[in-house]
Length: 143
Image (cartoon, rainbow, N blue to C red; front, side):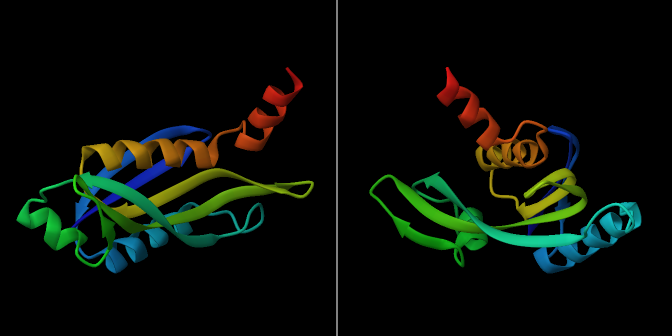
């Protein structure tokens, strides 16, 4: 299996690797890397799991089906809809009043294809962006 590992810092992707291996082991290895970078005096260390929905055009290639078979939740005439696990390892973060801000994270997820990779790269950037979505929405409402 191929696993996407992305390091995001302050709204930018600083490192991206596609690793061969099983997801749990790649996740543990990446968490070990993050632990080495973590400063326990300045931030929390958190691993969060979420599910990310992707749409893959049909027909699926046999290797794509093998990779996705445990994640497919539905399909239409033209596409398969899958929910893949995505793990965010936050190791440089801070509390600002009641908001939690990630400065540096690793994002670990199964590698599916270039399209989902690009979506996950954007997700990783957004997680550590200095300007959070709520701030953007508030600014738009004021206009």
